[in-house]
Image (cartoon, rainbow, N blue to C red; front, top):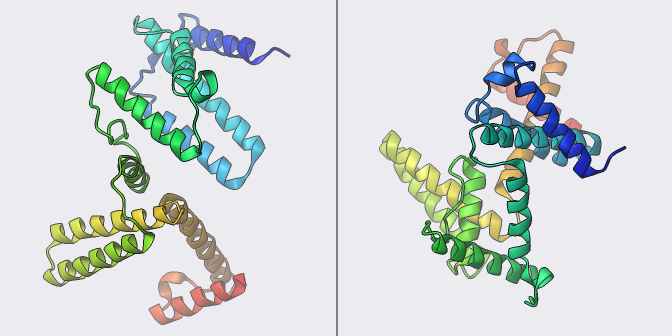
Length: 263
């Protein structure tokens, strides 16, 4: 069995063959744009494997990410943009340059200091390249809303913009909830949406300051809801009942029965 480098080279050769004249018609038609959604989907499947603690699935899903990365590198190489070697070299150089406390003489005292220095270097690199050097630069706009909110808040905190205590963040969330209730009373849809966004942002921040990821918390709630709903469907089917035919009171009674059964 070959080493990682040999297997990576084999993967590159396979993708080059698939893209070639004797390869696959589907693979030859693909572009960076057409593969965009599949890359995102594969990343989420990696996250799901991690959440499930499934090592075998994680191994498989990480392999799919490698396929996506090497495929994109091949597309870029075909149009003369960059090569796979340049991608890997850039990754190696980035890790080394951003870890001078490991590969150089610099010393740090904590993981927090590592993050702060990392962010400082990224900003300096952007300034040297004439790019956006804001503390918030580089946070992808395509991230899910909760995840992007947390990322923006972390960046702002590293720059020194943060509540002194989590309790103040929760007070801010309560303030946003009050403003949302006022918007609900007004009935103005755009204002309701705006204030709802403010409330969500404040809740993400308050949770983050307590070491809780709002994204993970919501995924957990989603999983709990799905599990309960499926058990409710099964219970109703066993009793010969249809959900749509029940009153709201009957539906809630079945829902509570399912919840009690979890204990």
